Amino acid sequence: MEVIPLILRFIQLIFLIILTGLIGNVIALDVDASTTARAAINFTMFVIALSWVVALFGLVAALFQSVAIPLVMLIFDAAATLFTVVAGIVLAAKLGTPNCGNLANDSYGHKWIAYGSADDAKRCREIQAGTVFMWLLLAAFSAALTLAIMSWRRTGGSVRSGPTMSQVVV
Image (cartoon, rainbow, N blue to C red; front, side):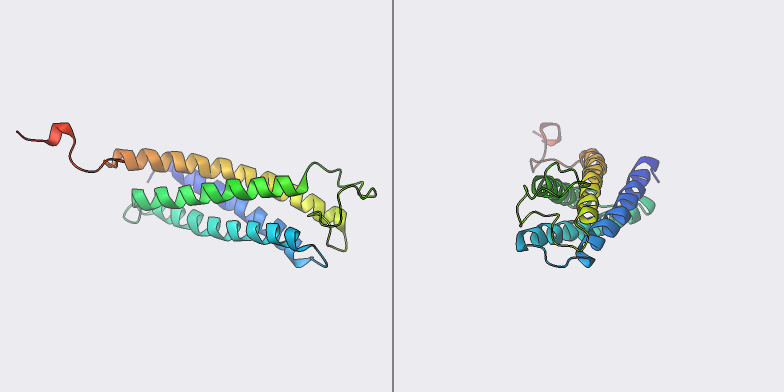
């Protein structure tokens, strides 16, 4: 049992618990958000659910080496990394850089992602925190992806198929 992948999976799970609470609360307190804001938040929750599956499978694979199939871990970690970066970009782009404590000026437009709750400042802060933790989750998944690539290469994985020159007998 390797320690570094295990620590990475626990870090991912901690970030996922926080993200589930933040984004779940944004969804739960949604009153009248625009459809584009709902789509961005719902996509983020989909990414969180996918990340839960990948992190839990990675945790099981780190604990029990018989479950750890390097190519499967590589595909799972690559998918989680890709979806996490997209969700981080979507949240950051839709939110912008507001001062959540001063939303009095309506310069963001009625379809802004932080509007649509009884307490828009709270929704704004939760989305800001969710964006930060999404980027931290990306760092954890990127490290896990790097370890998965190294593990896959260690087991003889290659992009090329067929024997190498040292395996060819003349």
